Length: 129
Length: 284
Image: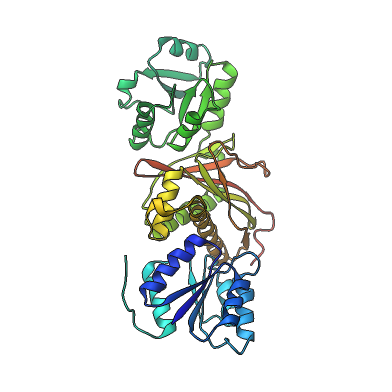
């Protein structure tokens, strides 16, 4: 199974990606919301989770979240918003738009791993670090 | 009376400085090999002739000692536009003073760098404390950097302290910019730590992204604190500039508050140029 990471920073994609691999999944990367949707359109069957940053150029995570929930082909996939925008207003806005969970940066390795495990409902295959 | 300590091996330099300061400034001096001796000083001037390792080590050693860590250390240079002079700023120096000394440049430098806390309104201090807290938390959680808080001072020259600087603009309850500045090696180590990579595996863009991410998370955390106080604040995407001597744009006509953090002999500078907006008390 795969986890789709939409994050404009290559460094953060690497960081989150290592946690994803450590949890036993394969990484699919996207640099913004539009690219994440393109990846889902191409093949969403084996995507177990979408991790979205909020602030990204071209299409931000919030707009991507709305479009994911509006498409019946992949509206069932859990979405984790992982962002530095931690204001209560932002969290409520994302949950109302269909986010399954919300993780505020800075987060620890354990926090991200727990989110992945909980949202994909499978045990951790291994840990790193 | 302000007390100035001049660390130099030149009697000629001491005399030249003495001729340029008013009676309100008391000058004491030490030779370089005596630099560890603790004096009661408000500001330290340090001859910085070539940027050699000996001079850099002395600067770092002074900054690591409790008697010196919280006061301005000014590098005395012949030319401020050299790479080593700018590098000195990233190693904990507060500013530069150019020789030959004149009454004008000595007093201008001291006035620029020696502003103390009485010039900061209580509300500004609250805001600054939020940024300091956010910076220390983000560096620890995201990069595993347990930094030590060092001096806060005001830079009217608006020059960033480091080789790489990430800035974020803010509007709303606070208008202004927050910038995080450090040398390239520290930024590389920090970025590598974020992604659990080796420093040499990162290209320049990833190093800059790591710094931008830290600035983004610091601003985001302060924004969250603002919302918790029913105040609104919006932040931009981070912008990273490279090279020593880059300057913040003083568009707000506000001073540049600089707070130094130390980790392993390297310095990370938090630069804040803030103005509380008139409508900041409007609930979010």
